[in-house]
Length: 244
View 1 (spheres, rainbow, N blue to C red):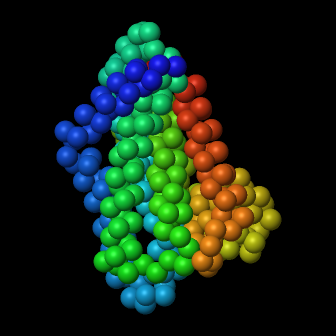
View 2 (cartoon, one colour):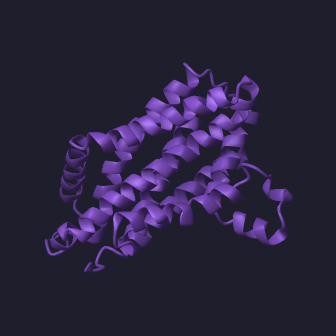
View 3 (cartoon, rainbow, N blue to C red):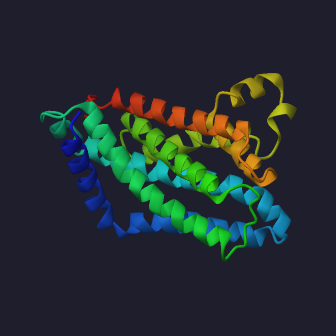
C-alpha cells in the first residue's frame, strides 16, 4: 500500500466531482431537501424528532450509494479502471483512494444536512450531537462502500441505479422504521438482524431516547463500521473484473 498513490487517486476523483455540478447538487441538495420536506410533512415537531434522526442516516446512504455506483461504473466501462490496474498500484491503494474521495464528499454532505436539521428545522436530539454526526457519516460511507461493490455487477448506469431498490429498499422495510423488529415474523426478524441498516435505525433510536451514549449505541456503531469495511473488501475483490 502506498499513501502517495492513495492520495493521488483521491485527488483525481475529487477533481472530477468538483467539476460535476449536477452531481454536487445531488449529493448536498437532495438530502437537505428531503429533510426539509419531511419536517413540513410531519407538521408535529414530536413526530419529526422521532423519525428525523433515522431518516437523516438513510437519505445520505441512498444518495452516496447512487453517486458512487454510477461514478465507479463509468470508470469501469470507459476502461479507466482497467488501465489504472496495469500501473504499479495495489487494489487497496485504488480502493482507499475512491473511499477517501467519496468520504470527504460525504463529510461535507453530512455537515450541511445535519446543520440544517439541528438549526433551521429544529430537530430536538436527546443524545450527543457528535454521535449523530458519526452515525450519519458512517451511513454515508456504507453507501459509498456498497456503491463501489455493486458497480462491478452493472453494465450500464440504468443497471447501477436498479441495484438501489435491490440492496437498499429491502433493508429500509426490514430495519424497523415502520414496524419494530421484535414484532416482525421470525424469519423476517432473522434477516433484519444481519442487515446494517437495522443497526443504523436502532442507533438513531438510542440517540432520540437517551441523553448519553449507551452500550447498545456503541455496539451499533461497531456493526455499521464493520459492515462498511466488509463491503470495501468485497469491492476490492472486484477491481480486476474486466468490462466489455
